[in-house]
Image (cartoon, rainbow, N blue to C red; front, side, top):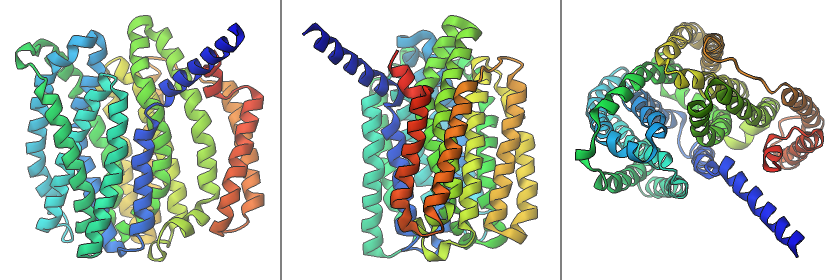
Length: 485
């Protein structure tokens, strides 16, 4: 009886630890899955120009958010763990003022972005851009507060329900009013706006403005303000490809690029974000309590998870790009799609490695200005390559520019971060994961044999099963090693 009870307790403990590591996964995976569903469905309903306009709203809105809002959210997250319970009450009044100021200024910046090209210089585009920017800004701020409070269940529920309702609303509007980017945007961005307003209403209601600690807020701003440059340059590299595609080739080229880009990049982003949501707060606590030794151990554990998840994903996306493009995007969007899928995946990998591994060291030591300097050469490189390659290679040229920029940024971040903390690499895990990925790739080549998307039904499960079996037998599977402790 005692043995049975012990086994039950061990099983419950393993489940709790699994949820601790991957409890945020649904909040990351569902929105990305819905984004992929948008590509599958709406690239068959909208022409490339209309889908390109929808994509431009998202990329321009993301650039505005990076410039005006993201950096302050990171400041709240970084400083909350220093004072725990009382920190939010002291930082919240100032953070809300920054949020409101950013939303107002964003209206002027959004007007400037809208007027940069003829295709975007319409009142409809500007209004949808503002709807996306304001709604996403309010929602992201509220979700960040839930994350700092460790209210994971509510966070996950909101991020699972919101994109599903948005997809339903967009589908209804497109069916009633016709297939164009306006109906698609109104459905998705409108639902995001409603969720953002409701969440912020609940948060603001509990704020005690008299409890504001402006000294702590000033300290937080000194840390967070340089992050404006970091987030701006990161998003500038991402946005520059679609901006120059639209400027040089028109929104149809943007639509073709965005459809393929949206297949592979979100997959890699999901993996990085799932790990980061749970591990970044632990990294901060480890550094605050145990210094550089604790941070090294925490980063090594994070690297183990990322290597285990990302290396095989890159292998699969590279080898299966052609059948995936046939299966997932409409016929008008397939020109150059396999190569864009491959390059976007590698670009996302280098971007994630920089943001969620090397850049974490700058956050710990509050060297955010140095962090921003690693991005400027990469941004300039991406601009030059976009101008040189897009006129000749179109969407594929834009993808090459993006991956080159992110690769340079990752290399520079790695070099400069070593001045503050030396990373301990999980070498054994890297070797075994690399070996398992090679065998998985050989299996894919033997089974798939061409672009037939129907073969994906059994190619993917067999290849993934082989990979997991090798990692399990080698004893380097990070998740299960940790769960068994």
